[in-house]
Image 1: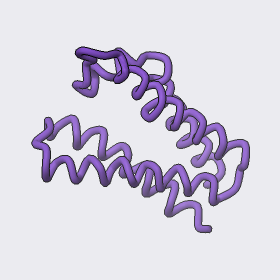
Image 2: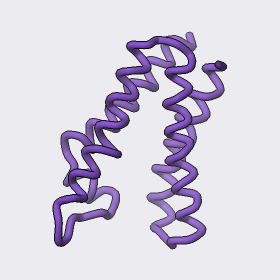
Image 3: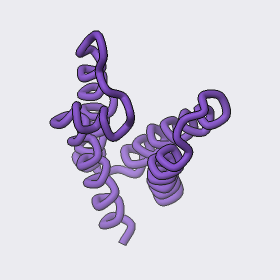
Image 4: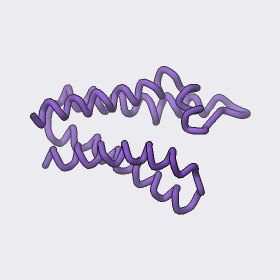
Length: 117
């Protein structure tokens, strides 16, 4: 059962990453990060929000070992931590931060707790 849920969570990771990878303008808009003077933000969407998570999910499924899945959890934990710090320091839209951060925290908790290394 853990193996199936790992694959489902990895596929979710890939799906979320594909938004940033293939639709950076949509992703930037959803995150309130519209490009202004430069399109470098779109490059950042494709890289850090997109490709990083697409390849992490694919790699975990390819490696198919607990540590591979746990590493995705640590990446999501870092993202959730960043959102938490942002709540304290940046005054972002709380609802969006809680939604995206909650998804990241839930995936982090699953990947780390279900895959002891």
